[in-house]
Length: 161
Length: 329
Image 1 (cartoon, rainbow over the protein chains, first blue to last red):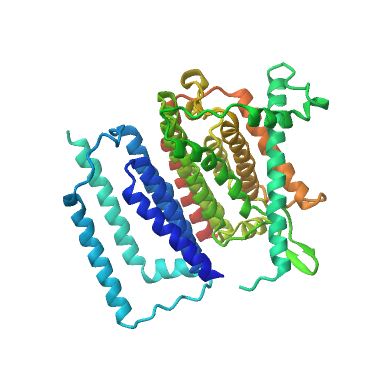
Image 2: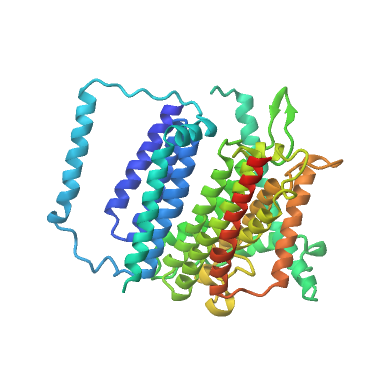
């Protein structure tokens, strides 16, 4: 049963992301991306990480995408029908990335390393927290300080003029 | 995880039960609001349809369903039809984690009175409330009208700001209960409801959920005096109905959460647990209506000031004090 749900979610995830890339309208692209984030969150839940699933929705779907939406609504972009269609030269960075990803996948599949599913067991929040804040506590602090520096830096650059 | 037929049947039964209860509750909450507002404003309110106007919700639904459903020609049709669902769904889905009463024994199975006891319940609620923003934002944007757009931009910034203070006011509750699961939070209040230890967090949570419901004094996204009807100006018929019912379901779900986090949920003396739960939720619903009949609307800068410069720092301070108290005790 879990496998079936997994493949349904995978299909939604891929289709959603594809639509997000090809959508001409920025707001629609955001909605498609949010759909794929939901599928991804459910996938995390299925793999036994409900905490990550909740964070996926809170942070990505609920905060970052909402911020994007806010900016797009404030900017009042030109209507997409008037914009020129993307040329091939706009596509090649994406194509390069596709080659890299497909190459990595091929290497992974050919090297006979079978990915072992974690067995669909729930990892309790307590255990997750101990691992994150005891074992990797310093790393977490460094990352959060970096984010703070970025925030202060952005504020400084924005205020200078 | 093995599921037998009884488990699946119980789960489906619970889902249907919760659906029926909240939709009926929401329908009668609309009526209650109109009657109570009528009383507060010294007029009668709707009392023509059925005895004491009790059939009014039915009449409203028939009216909504038979009205013309208009989509403006310049609107984004897909997002325009998606937005009302995005507004109502998160509020309904919140009920999946709300324990309505004490666990009971049915056919030798121990049945919890909640659809799913997630071990990340509080975060599930936060996730849904952060997604609820999309209904307002997309509805206003897709309508392609300046009033709707202004309303939805206001709504977006208001919901983001107050989500923060709402989330932070729940941290002390989680610290006291030592769990994110709603069943554990209710069990932790067996001796004493958390409102006794956390009156400040309760006050912050209450103001924040008023803002999250977009009700007076925080109804800036709608502000009928300035923005016609704000983000749902262009909506008619049942699509408007979904926005409308979504607001009332939101009142019920946030009221239930407030009673779970701070008033001990279904715990109470003498009366059966489920009755206690609905009494508490009813009190919150009444409070929401009372506030609407009493307070004027805030100005936009006052709203932002209250959220960012007052409630959020206060909630952070409250977390610090709670932490010290827990460490030194």
